[in-house]
Structures are given as structure tokens and as C-alpha cells.
Length: 233
Ligand code: CA
Image: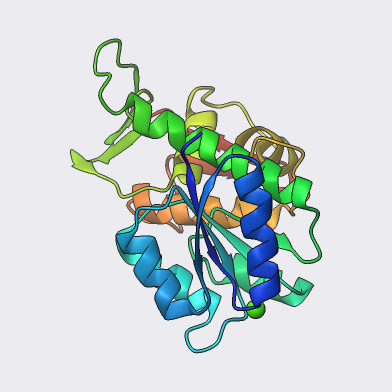
């Protein structure tokens, strides 16, 4: 395994523990101890995944996440210390792929890292495979399953891996309604302990990207008090 994990955590001891744990599992690691350096390394050192602590000196983890997302879709897991920080991570729509609340077990963190990397592996390894391309078309939205690509009106949509996975999951079974719990389980891909608001936030981001009017969606529909479904136009 040659994946590189960037650990952005100012507490030296925790940073070292994470470094040790991931190296033991065969990953390469990079460490940053403040937000600005973390952003710089995330954008320049080509990590496979970023673990980003929220409480950092100078630029905090939330601003760092927003900064990284301006130009990069690298998978990001936020490390949060408190439940109210989770609310912020979810509510602010920072574009993080996942979050984990301290104290977390190394096993849980490792499982989430693996799940995210597995997905981004698929993305990068399918980039060159053009034959047998399967697409789902609805109205002016075209979802290219093999190439992890979404086009709206002929223009490629800038989409994160998780947003793509969610859209794909809904779109391969149009008109079928899925509860948030089912979406969490299937799209987030492991025994997810997070909460269903994560689904709502990702749905909202998707709508902003593929709907003409996100408040009047035509593609990603809400079935009140049940869940979501994809509408094939
Ligand atoms: Ca910290």
C-alpha cells in the first residue's frame, strides 16, 4: 500500500500516535502542526487523504478545509473534539468527506480511512478506462458511472467522491425512495456512527451543483418524512 496520509494535528503526541498507527499499517505519513502548513502540504505534497484536526493554532481546521476544497477534492476526515463541533462541520458544509469525534478508537479511524481510500482508488484507477462506459442520463444531467463524472448541460460538474457516490446510488434506481439511514449505510459504506444530517447536507450540495433551482429540485427529490429519490426526466 503506498497511500500517503497527511496528519494535521497540533498536539505533538497525538500526531505521533497517529503517525505510528498508520505507518504500522503500511501507509506513508506526512505531518503538519498548524492549519496553514496543513493546507500547503495538502495542495503541494499530493497526499491520498487528509486527517484534519479542528482546533489548530492560526488557521483552524474548518478554514483549512474550505481552503483545500477551493482547489482540491482530496478526501478529508475532520477530527473533532466535541459534539458541538460536529454540528459546525455538518452545518457549515465545509466539503469534508467524513468526521470522527474524539476520543476515537484507532480501529474506527483506520476503518474510515480505508473506506475513503478504497473509493478514491476506484476513481483514479478508472480514469483511463474509457471502454464499456455506462451512463445515466436525465434531462440535462449525464452521470458517467465508470469515469466518476457528472455533466450538467454539457459542462463537467466539480463533484466530490461522496457526492458522486450518493448521486450514483440514487440514480441507478430512479424513482425508488431511500431513507437517510439506508443512504448512510450504503453510500458511506461501513457501520457508520455519524448522523443522518450528513445525508441532508450532501443532498443539498448536490442540488446546488445539478439543479437549475436547488429550492425546486427536479432531479434529486425529497419524499417528505421518508427520504430521497432520483427523478428520471
Ligand atoms: Ca488540536
